[in-house]
Length: 587
Image 1: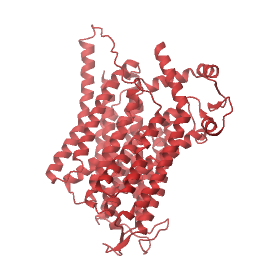
Image 2 (image 1 turned 30 degrees about the vertical axis):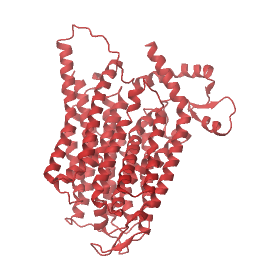
Image 3 (image 1 turned 45 degrees about the vertical axis):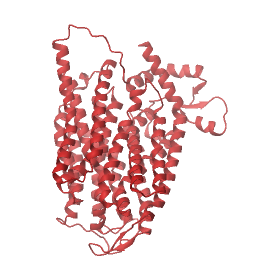
Image 4 (image 1 turned 180 degrees about the horizontal axis):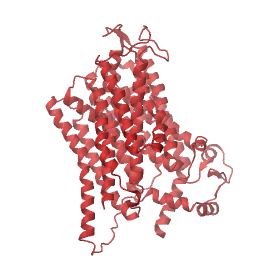
């Protein structure tokens, strides 16, 4: 009884961690101040943004730490890295401590790969980015351990809250000092550290694994609770969208921020309700027999996946005889018996034979499906992240510096909605089944559409619409990626394979950001600076026009790659669904 309520306490703690540790999403709020204080060019500022995202490259270190250290210590190390990384940046920007701002005395227009700004700032940004990756790994482990049969729902819900971090920090900053951009760095240092301390209590009281029920009935009851939590999350997102970037006075902003905190605390009622329900059932209602409800929200992916893996040999035989396909390779790759040409031959080559088959890192990098998936993520979701990093300069170039907080909140809120939407396929699969890779392709459509709009007009309405579309698209991709990786390349290998996948984020942050920065600096001019030299500022539509053209074309390639991935994996998803239905009818 206590174990069931404790696992929901773990979920609430994970929501808190995710909500307050997406600190890389508010980079654009203080990037202009950082650029001015360090007296650096847009290209050099891009290196700092890349360092924030380079924590993904070291994602494997968090998994390695969990192999040898207790989870509570890992989360403390993660919060300490963020505290030091962001804290020292805040101290330096406010001239409380001195860091060597420049390694050499050269013009800020230098475009060398090793820019003449402080290496210390680059390393501090890198350390901060690592802390985010460690927090995410801790949250994944908590969800997987405590919700073994509702893993996709737990992951999609908790990961969704990572998208509201920027909106929460904007509210917090406005309630303290709206005029201070450097305040975001202080909040980024303190808030995750304090949140980690609060989350340690339920983490240290995790229920034993043998107390967690894995029955289908438990999965169905849990899915109802997840549905309630998703509705609460939607309400939280709408609240932050309406009030997250309010330009009201500090007192009103404090009220709005207090309301947001109350919404984040409200899921705490779930563990209490679960405990009271179980007590009532065991103490009072045990003599009554309740008929099973026919209302089924979602079937358990992992449960059915496990059944399919256990029946692999029988499934392979039946497919060879009935479907006209055979499994010829040791990887489980699928070959067409008939000779096809052109597009059909490409779609059938080295095709996945079934979902959930484990792929080691050495095998996964040899799969064409993995690289189609990698390109779709690289050309789609990663561009959305780089766009959010540049929102500060985009708004400034269009004379909308005062609207930066509004744009960041808009991106954050719609990214949150996109993450929540990634759970929809699990809820509607009994009414309408569609391969998850197909949903991924649909989710990529808004990104090229947004960039087409941004190249066509520089109006405020188009800027807000484009920002919302990009946030919605990238949020879906970020949240759905874990489930897609698990289904395509095996649930037990997801920690390694997903870390390989997200190496595209720092690479894209560097390349896409460098492209935008070069175009920006090429159209910039000098204005009086605060320190030794003048700073470069670009004003007008020309600053990002060609960047949007390039990004739009690249995102269209990502969409094409995702469509190919869907066509190649559709057969495996359809086969999996047929097997799930037959297993359900036999049980």
